[in-house]
Length: 364
Ligand code: COI
Image (cartoon, rainbow, N blue to C red; front, top):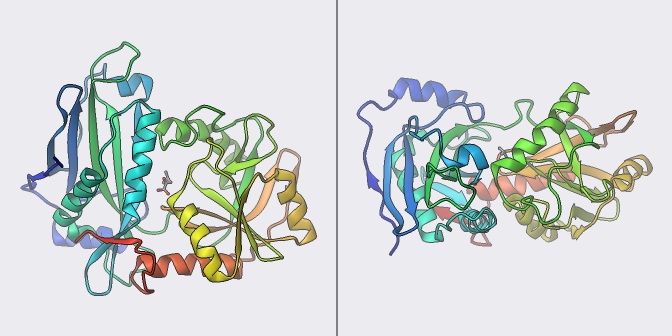
């Protein structure tokens, strides 16, 4: 039987004035709506105690397994306001299914797709006033489902008590500089994930392991780091929080193939499907970092962009590494193909183009 979320409204929600002030300039990941959805799993009982309750601190024992062994997975998706006031999500079942795959890899219980959807609907219906208005730029209510080992136990084994929650954060553009191309640093010393590891799962540890590489990049004047495969350190994988695409001079759209060490982005797979509509030939394969360096110099690579739920489609500019750099092909705001892919996605998400693939699900 699927979960029903009991609604416990907070007595002291944000005032209309305070909410309007936040929605006028939400930034990314800084502000949170009034409520959160939570459910508990125990080994004997399965999923139960589903509630929407006030957003606030969570109570965990210092011995909670997640704090020691990082048994945790999460998701990221957005709720978009359409012109008629309705609120929609983009391919939420893909997030539900990826969370199930991530949970299997981290030995966590799977949350059925119906329960995942019920949690999103319950939270978004309760906090619908937190979804930014239609026509206010690239704004949305960013939804962050997450699941963690809450059992207070220090033995190393899968937890017998697990908590699932969804929080909601009104969001503007992930990169405050908008479409200005990001400069990338090749992380030569740090790999993000290895064969047989957790690279394909959306788990906090992958993001933690990307931070030292990102810091190294920032120290070299870059915005983000690009990670290479851990076996040969020659093949492009991903940025840690985003997938990469390359537009060639003969109309191909290249992206690194899924090797088990790369996150299968929902935006990545949507772009691969949209490619044909835009007259591009999608190609998933191993891509050497040398191919990038060469391609931008000889003109065979015309455009490069990164993609993810949070940042949508972001032009990539210069590539730097210890002792060298490869030039940007992105101009001031990315190339024509980058911009048309970005527009095609956003138009479906905001209800400005027909949803021919059935990608949208109404939340409120
Ligand atoms: C997303 O695009 O939703 C991500 O997961 C990237 C980052 C904010 C963790």
